[in-house]
Image 1: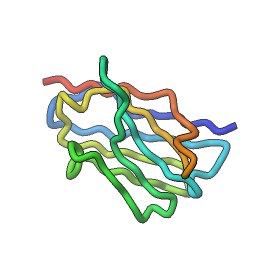
Image 2: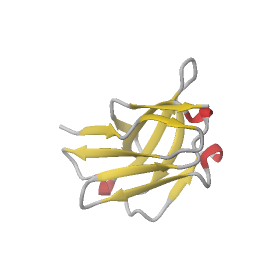
Image 3: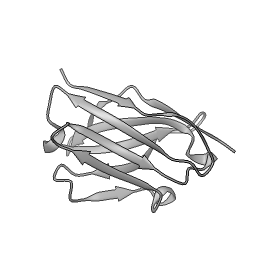
Image 4: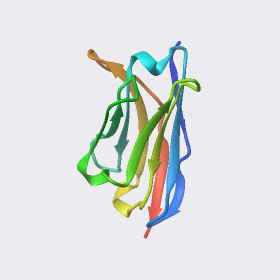
Length: 117
């Protein structure tokens, strides 16, 4: 059974940093694409960042470029999202997802990020 478990969310002041982790069990993520999504209250879930299984390609939504970094540790089967210079508009529930060409097949339960102004 594949499980994705996020951690690392919390309350941070504007300009602060957080590092989210997504631990994958039941399957090695090294053969999949990994991504982070987020959903703020009243808004649709949106893509934030993506990492390919070789850890050689990343992609980001424009609003987080230069501030967020996605990375993976194949040995730990864990994907990270380092978030710096956080803004109130970054506040959301952040979800980790794992997928392939057929879609995002596996999702975590989400971790809350709150940014105070």
